[in-house]
Image (cartoon, rainbow, N blue to C red; front, top):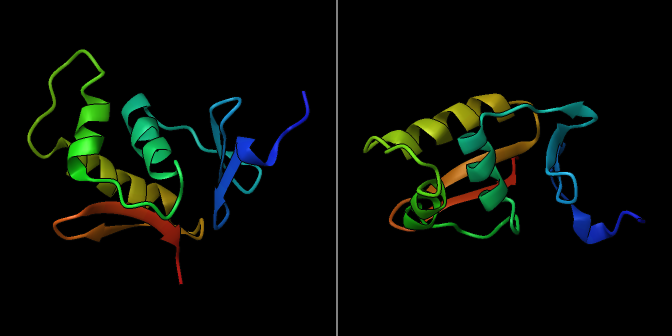
Length: 104
């Protein structure tokens, strides 16, 4: 099957191949734990869209075990560190949620 433009989403040097569910910074694969991967995929679908904290928590509730109250903030913090230098950043919009965007 030919790779459609809709199969790959990019922000800065970060890209998600939706067909294979793999993340890359340039050509290097980015390995993430399942929950961090889900958070990042939600933020990338589509990029530039504000995703509420409640929507991200709902996405993570698909996993079997319980989340601590500050777990989402911890996942976002770890993702920010892992994305440093990728040209993509996660911005907090107080009272609204999070969005991923190209870093200036």
